[in-house]
Image: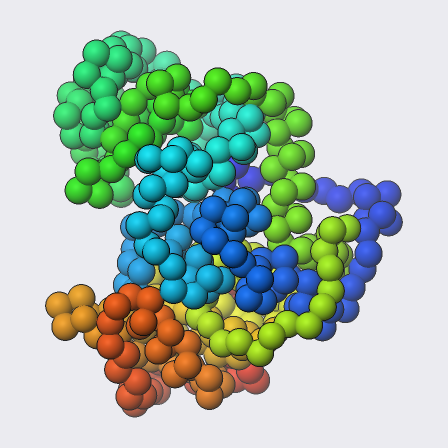
Length: 371
């Protein structure tokens, strides 16, 4: 998922003519260096600024995706720093399940316009229709937050109209749908968390006073920032480097990547650069999984060489390996460092791979469909 509603970019020949086409070998190095996986990352805030954003997700078989992305680049860091940057220093803000540097707010405010004006995609149309049908519900939510905010959504009444269908994430109550819709439109902001529940308030009370870029300009700025952070883009089967991308040696370090890491987020690009077929199988029925529930790619130097499924046993404070595939000669090194970051003990015994767990292949495991 991208932070903004994805718009398929149709690159013109003129634009591509201005970009440098690169080989797979160079593309690997450029991508890893642009994503700060070469050991060049320095500090949490600096890393997020260079990456552009961090995806948030509650699944934490080992650690949250935002923590894993930072650990892959920084090694052990102070896990409380994210909260301080968000809620105390306000150097970061949360929008649309991503963390952004506060200086990106003018761009994000421009992207918020899509949710207020566009009906191009089904989810945009649904939000327009939901809010139009629930104008009084919207006014109630805004009034309650104005008078009593910040509040978690559970302290707001469900005054919505329409059928009470059980939503995959929000259940039968539609308060979560309303606050999320108003958040996407820029009317509400996430201003904290209590017991892992978001605290909501009026956006004008939380965000600093900045401009909002016009939508087209915001989308261009976002696309440019994303390209810069990726270093290399795959367009019609060819690899093109961002003008600011710089080639160079990639240190021979071993680390594990979050399934949400932007190095592997574009599955087609991942396959083109590393011949690495990867998907996240958390929503695949266990009997049909090729590998495991939450499998992490293993990066060694400039190669994706294997994958592993570590799980943190929080009761025993042990990081256990429940599956490993491909070339895992350097896996123990990465697991020990990950366990140190988590303050746990690493249990490095290799599990016996059952046949249904999937065969290994050329470099990274069996071919699978892209998720």
